[in-house]
Length: 458
Ligand code: GDP
Ligand code: ZN
Image 1 (cartoon, rainbow, N blue to C red):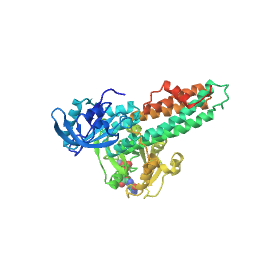
Image 2 (cartoon, protein in one colour):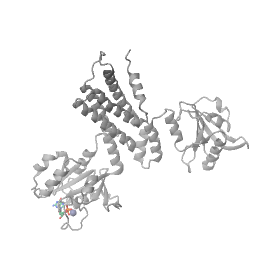
Image 3 (cartoon, helix red, strand yellow):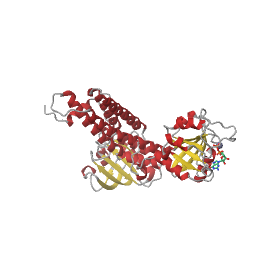
Image 4 (cartoon, rainbow, N blue to C red):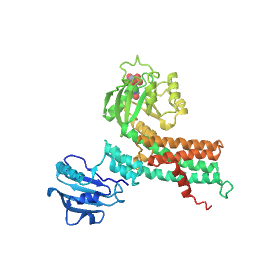
């Protein structure tokens, strides 16, 4: 536990009607008791109670403010240390002078994030929660705030902890098999390892999928529209913009001079990149633009490939269909108001029904189907239910990817008949990566954990 006692203004500086000075550390109660006048001595009040009184400068015997003081003795406090909070209501000048008085009577000014850091060091919260508190303070949008708040409440940790538990139990089984092969333990089979790894992998993937959904809601789906000249790319863009009446931005890109339009497709923001001639002035000079837009295509989250219902498939389109089939691509069959000539069976060979949308950009018909297709491609059912943990922190996402890789390696190894003690390395790596999300130092603790789980009786 830390020696010194820290203090800071815990509320936002500004015109608020109350402001809180938070004091934490072993001298917190003593420090505030020196400057607080009320019926009871602060050193004797029960924990988690609020006292009414006045802050008084002991040197000048002058009353600074009328306050409420809350005493929360450790470890049942935010930092797990003794915490005293002084709620002042005299505005910015008063709160500052109260803080100064606290600092002159035994506390030092807290560094940014130091209360949270202490909560982590004292084991009150894990690292994911601590980081969320920081995100919470920094969050700019409402949604980012909600994500951070849920995480601070431990939503992510609650998911990670059982996953780790499952892995540690698996590791314990493996360990016993390696160290006590003669022991009368049921031998660990490749099937058993695979089953457990797959189960954890599913949960990791779920978190990664949702983190992507969270990113999409925050940042929009980067979308490119491709197709042959005259297929109706510009018309589709216009139909989307008109339907939504929501061209939010029109930002000339700074790096590659790409123009971007944002439209909202039933709440899902699409960022349409003008690449292969979205905004061409003359379709005569427009090329298919596959070469030109290759860079943008590889950056895109979504590709809309526009085909002309009224014409047979062109060789260029066959190439595009082939090139895009393994990506997030929706085939838009445009001009359904005209008689059909398109060889749709060829498209259906590589694209499921959910990925093919029929519409008429000219008549604004079928746009809702496009909305459904986009939503189906990017969102799992969980989005509507609202019960979702968006992992938004880059460090957490990187660690989840690391976990995924290790689990996949382990599963692969079981298929290849790799010896169990080698598979164990992958299992341990996945356990450690998840642990780093929570801020656990691994290493020795891995073994301690394994053996604390398992009573071998020998
Ligand atoms: P782009 O070259 O792919 O951008 O195609 P445009 O959007 O410029 O459209 C080419 C031509 O097809 C224009 O004359 C449009 O009016 C027409 N067009 C676009 N969409 C439709 C549609 O859904 N139905 C019909 N009948 N014509 C369309
Ligand atoms: Zn066009």
